[in-house]
Length: 173
Figure 1 (spheres, one colour):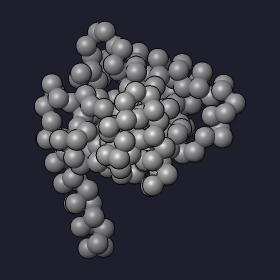
Figure 2 (spheres, rainbow, N blue to C red):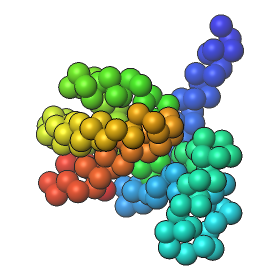
Figure 3 (cartoon, rainbow, N blue to C red):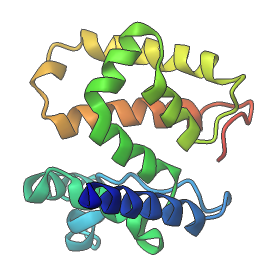
Figure 4 (cartoon, one colour):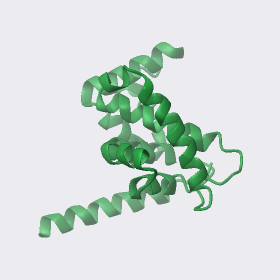
């Protein structure tokens, strides 16, 4: 019991600590799978797509992308932002998020929207866009062959692109 309480307290502390490190102007950050973690450290001098691909492969090979998403969340000086927090959450909660996308919403989807600080009134519209893109992703026969990390990154890209391309200003950017 004490261990669970300590773990929950530490987790809450890390979450709150991460949330207070960045300002809204700094909040949007890099892709945690390709611009954070071991891969980004090792391949930072490689320019163009080759560096991005090598960083992603390296992050996935070393630890399934955990270091990238953790460094994105816990090291704001290297990869700060809502993007990193959302990526970590999506990676950890992917099965629930996928179920909720199929159902039309739920607490995990709301949590992702809250991470991006999307207004309550905009969430149904944004969720509709996310669901449409996710539906297209599911039509790709190779999606089911992808690793968990690849699927999580694809879902993160959908959320991130939807929020980034929203011109109404209903989410923090």
